[in-house]
Image (cartoon, rainbow, N blue to C red; front, side, top):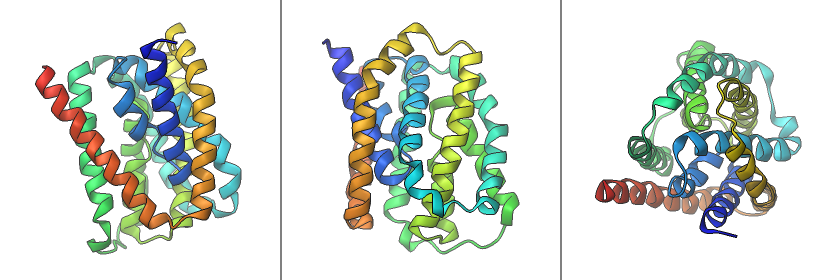
Length: 246
């Protein structure tokens, strides 16, 4: 097993674990590792595939938390955004993508770490939810990062942990399945992506299983803070190393 395969396994294990724990986040964890070894045009479809695997694996556990009137506006908006993100994918440069993702990771994690100080938003209704879904769909089609924007918005809404997970996980599974289809139609599901998927599959399943078990047993808030801190450092490291290498 070479360095590439070990890198893919490490990213898949981390991504599956975060997804199993939080209900999303395969791309947040995996891309920080995978982008050190493969280009975005390979990493992004791989994130989408592994995200669908981990989401489908843990979905039965949260079935009772899915409230369709709350979830559908996000999904409908996301379906509009996915094709736009897929069209942007072939135009993403390696260094530009790394810096974008690193900055996104730092901003997102910083927000989530300090979100308790932010007041609850009650305006906008379903229309605002749908607009957030569009943004999540664009990021989903581009890099498999459909989860962060709806999660931030759900936090601003003041929803409980299980309410957020029900919305975000169903949204992610729907949008990333659609992203997988659009990327396949666009020719991004290459033989190399298929080969790396076979490498990533067992680690994704194992990571999602472990993350879900921890979600059920451990104080979620405290552990999330540790995870977000690690991801924040990963984003910072990605930006700094890319800048120096360039």
